[in-house]
Length: 132
Image: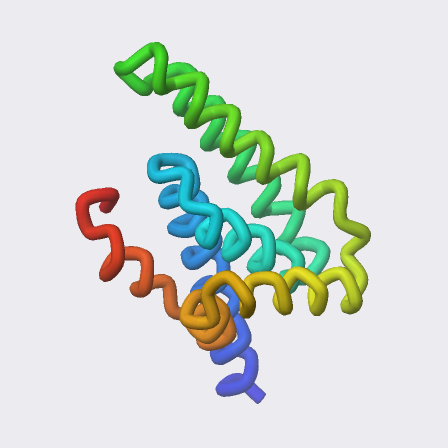
């Protein structure tokens, strides 16, 4: 039982890391595939984990507004992050909602969906090393 519990915890942690990296790429690059990757990660997460992800978005947007040195870019980054928050909160959290989002990500970028299913966030670091 302990093995199974540790596996679930690691997977959950990996999904959260994947989510944060996808948000980072969307915020800095405006990459629509990364936006959907973040949305799907949140929609696939459990209720408690999704709530935590939404909290992270609020925190990220706040940090950008307070600390990002380039004022014109600051608003863009914050707006992108907050738009993700709205999208995630607008979902109903149902399995059908998650499946629909997964199908859209599969159409846009199947590699991102495969990485999400295995909770592997390294795809973002490989594709966009300068953002990390």
